[in-house]
Length: 334
Ligand SMILES: C[S@@+](CC[C@H](N)C(=O)[O-])C[C@H]1O[C@@H](n2cnc3c(N)ncnc32)[C@H](O)[C@@H]1O
Image (cartoon, rainbow, N blue to C red; front, side, top):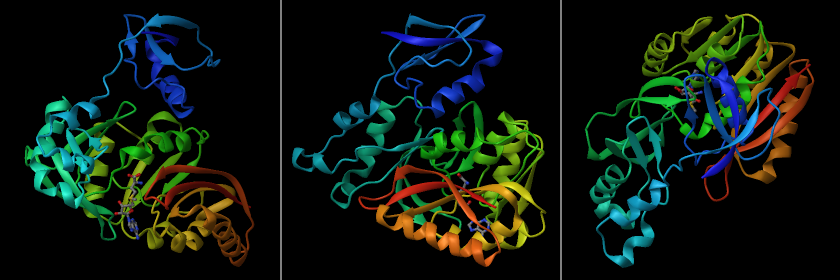
């Protein structure tokens, strides 16, 4: 089909693609095209990013989720319990299955493999557990291995879905944060996991240093592998408890706190490590009516630390349950 597109020389394409994706105007349903010289990025509207805009033909990317549902062999009266979506991490699909559909977990897994070319393993997700935020997963179809390499915005993240946390639904959020990093900043990623925020920042910006802390030894092992895999520099992995480790690192310009059930408990230590005027990207899962109260709580923590809070931005990053959402806050502490 025809679409507007931004025409970018190949060597310049990746940062422009990230920028268009973070602004939500890169058309995800269309296949990006390239020739020897240029990359053609399909967009939903005209935006001046310093490159020409043309109209060209693009191939549509099939919406494969519909196909998987029709491939499941199960009684019609139970079809309404079929999952409506699943996450894909590399070659592994992770799907939540309602109790009513559990006897058909194997069929659902086979159908997903049949419908989605890149998927070789289907894991049933029985929820996120423990302080490392890992999922309890059970392979219901395909290869037994739960290790894979996930690609996100041109970067590679090796991980084991049973041993570490990773959410592909945070991809755009990571770009929104990375785009704010100015040259020469010191960034601390307090709960870094296998490194998706840290490595994106190290690869696409020019920070002085990124410190990536995590207490899960498996996450740190994959983080170190991913630093090498992506040839990232200016980044140091730190294994340990963020509360203790951050105190040893000196002042940061920016701190990322992606531990959405308990980041608030670490806020005093984060504020102490932040230079005046620095920014904290804070994440929490909550109901919308509780947001203002939470900002008041954070204001009180800032005052106790002898600082003042200046909220800069707030985003609903994703839904978590019918009443709870995952929110992101950009907060400056003066
Ligand atoms: C929600 S995950 C976020 C991972 C990563 N930022 C991402 O976007 O994929 C939270 C991470 O914090 C780590 N974690 C939990 N408690 C911690 C602590 N006290 N100190 C350091 N890391 C911790 C977990 O092991 C997990 O990898």
